[in-house]
Amino acid sequence: MDDNKKTLYSAVQPTNNLTIGNYIGAIRNFLALQTDYNCYFAIANMHAITVRQNPAELRQRTLSLLALYIACGLNPESTAIYVQSHVSAHAELCWVLNTFTYVGEMERMTQFKDKSAKHADNINMGLMDYPVLMAADILLYQTDVVPVGLDQRQHVEIARDIAQRFNNVYTPTFKVPEALYMKVGAKICDLLDPTKKMSKSAENINGSVFLSDDKDTIIRKFKRAVTDSDTLIKYDPENKAGVSNLLSIYSAFTGKSIAEAEADFAGKGYGEFKLAVGEAVADKLVPIQAEQAKLLADKEYLNSVMKSGAERANYTARKTLSKVYKKIGFYQF
Ligand code: TYM
Image (tube, rainbow, N blue to C red; front, side, top):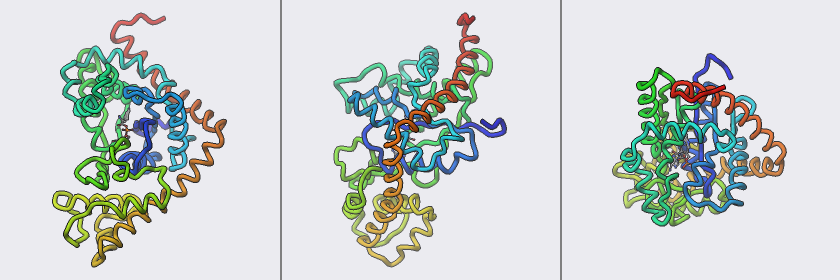
């Protein structure tokens, strides 16, 4: 790790199938930023179990996400890619930070309320504690920036509050992190209901495009995307949510600005537009999928990446944890 660089931290949960929302809102930005920062990219399997998981699937999805990170272009030589449960400091710091977090704050978290409604039969303590574990993730690495989608804004804010609270009670211990959102794509919406976030666990799978979808499926889903009764291809999220969402996706997958994307489709019809967006997405995803499959066949390599990532993460995490234990009065020998 380079002492002159700032630190970047982010994570993705290995749950369900990842969507192009995860790619655009998070992974794409990891790629763009990985050379400018010292990076830690985690596979958040401890967060994943706050909703009941099938154990065999969780194990497989952990490997799949690791392979996906690399297939997308994250460099395991220069960044620390690791599995959250391999670094026990996350659970340990979470426990300490729990004593700096109020129950009322956690009850008010939007995602807790949403997930409680969705999983009414399993509103477990982990679900409520989810933001504190996320704060522990971020704060362990003295993180400067956290690139995430907009749905994670509240969680990064609470991590900042907890850091400041701890720093005020003791002496400065944690760096106070900043969330980093991209101008375009911080909230990719469902293709069938563009007022809703595109989600891994959407009820109708046709509204979400999964990173594992094949070309035909991708094209079919985009052809069915909801637009409006107008004919203009213009970025106007308030009045033209569907069209604007498609323009954001196109821009993210082609690297073109929104203005360039609008120019590409000036005078064209919605049918042609939707097909072109689908093709841009498929053109990018198909090679990533092939690379991911290749990597998944080499488990030894993936294990070695995981191991060295965990070692690097553990080194930094332990340093912070030891500082915290000292401040709060835990006897260390
Ligand atoms: P997860 O797995 O739910 O989402 C991973 C990332 O994808 C972003 N995202 C989106 N961005 C734009 N449009 C969408 N429709 C969309 N859907 C998802 C999320 O904002 C996120 O950045 N709690 C985190 C995982 C986590 C984490 C952390 C993140 C655990 N510890 C520490 C940052 C720092 C999450 O929601 O993952």
